[in-house]
Image (cartoon, helix red, strand yellow):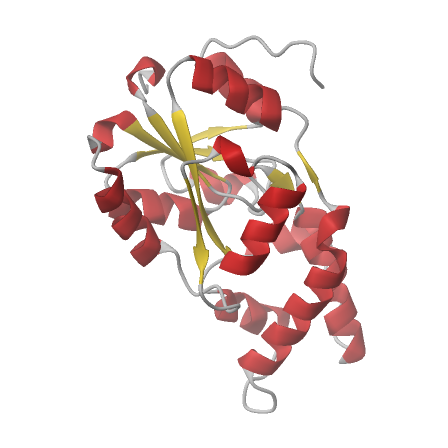
Length: 223
């Protein structure tokens, strides 16, 4: 069992962890699939197959990259997502939880597979950019992996890895945490189903309310 009093810095994933946008990824992908007369997906089926590298997820959806490049279909998805990205909302506990954790002396950063420019725009839009000492995204739209960025960020932090916690919502977040040498907690309210998260062996909790309880923070009034 993690001793949550030991942590002085939290590295947060963005999509599905702080931003409630799994449903939006499904909605947008179904637009892309419909144009190709391909079978639509549900949020449940999405959470069972979504992963990194994202190209493998597209293959599971039925895309044939001998007929159409991943770059083409992937960019089409991104363009549709960018048209609709501000429809998503932060989970209601995000801002009060970040504030309370900061009162405990815990700093925050974001490590995301989203494109850096879009990530900057979204964190600015939701007025939480100043909550983080670092916001690290990718320099491309194709979401291969965030391991390299994570390892580099750990070096920049110059902190004891035992004092750092990674919080995410996918099995890839666990892989990133392992590569960084830090503890990991996975939230089951995001982009992967709970069985996949449990298979990692990481601590899995339902949502940010449960996370607040682990840090002995009371957010009972926020639903």
